[in-house]
Amino acid sequence: MQENILIECQDKLKQAKRDFDEFVYLVSHDLKAPIRAITNLAGWIEEDLGNEIPADVKHNMQLLRDRSHRLEKMLEAILLLSRIPRTDLEIKAIAISDFIQNISAAFEDENIKIKNESDLPTITTYHQKLKTVLEQLLKNAIIHANSLPIEITVKGQVQAEFLQISIADNGPGIEAHQKDRIFNIFFTGNGLEGNKNIGAGLTLVKHILDFVGGNIELQKQVAIGSTFLINWPLNITQKP
Image: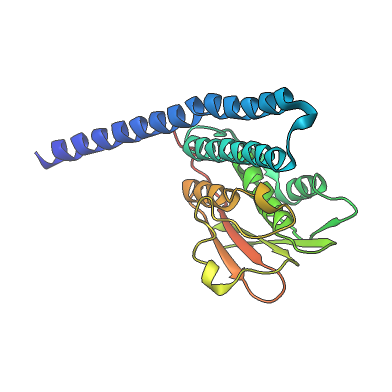
């Protein structure tokens, strides 16, 4: 009897998760059309007013477009979070140090310097999910920088059953009263890109690590710079 009750509860839980995923997808997907319509309407109103548009009205129209774009990005972030258990599930062998180097190279320019000090083995894992985690942590360091040049150091080691990767930056750091909120979705801080940051990157990272059986922690949060440490499982069991 108890076994039947357990199976029934598990089935109900699976159905509830499916219903929730469908709800999130519908909300995120179906709201995009009216948001884009608002953005288009703002542009059409400006065109109708032509050169006679007052400066304050023009400013408000730009604010309307900016807020609409921001809302669209927020919906996209919710959709990405809901897809974590269902997407990027291919597992393959990757040479981690070279993998990190290739990802870092895509961000570097004259104002962004990324030092790769990792010497890590080849592992078989969810390569796209790991790529997303590393990209989001690098983006987070860049977005929240408050001066140039931006300097980021990536280190790695094998510790027990985990691949440990730290990403340290020379930014403003994170104040103590904010450290418990940084993984909350849509929590933002000030940086070079201002309101272009919607505060979803670290949330996405944490959810991916929860999915694969890893974790993330903020090691340093004051003075100059922040250091995030991720623990990524060396052995991944592919999930159905």
